[in-house]
Length: 147
Image 1 (spheres, helix red, strand yellow):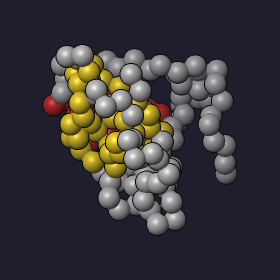
Image 2 (cartoon, helix red, strand yellow; image 1 turned 90 degrees about the vertical axis):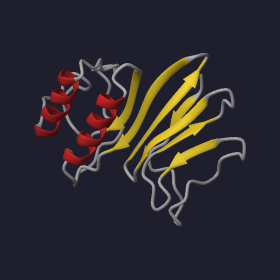
Image 3 (spheres, one colour; image 1 turned 135 degrees about the horizontal axis):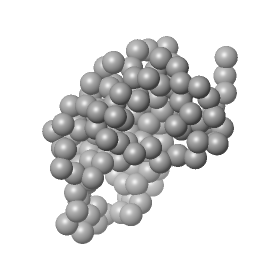
Image 4 (cartoon, rainbow, N blue to C red; image 1 turned 30 degrees about the vertical axis):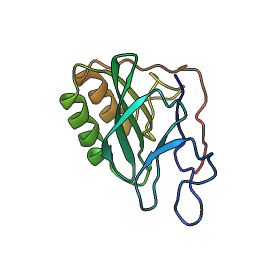
């Protein structure tokens, strides 16, 4: 199964660009920050929630349904709205296998070599509330280091 997310892969004109025509793209129309790209035409895709910073889709492959969420939470913004959107989708599709791909801009020893911060605590609450499993190498360095 080929499912890719490329947060912030947009041009200066705020459009998702530079992909072959056979690639199905699911993203917000104006200044998207996250996107799902589907190259496998056998995967049925049902868009559920298409927002600037969060894309939620349901996919069906070989009779199995999956809830897929891609999001980016800018460090300059509160997590509340994004966490509420994720929670709503998780409650609505509670019987489906779920994959959440995201940049929460939060710190925790669960997913990286840093102590937990306020944002990390919020993500911990989501993980515990929905009994989610974090799949990440806790020894991996952040993908971006900045001020």
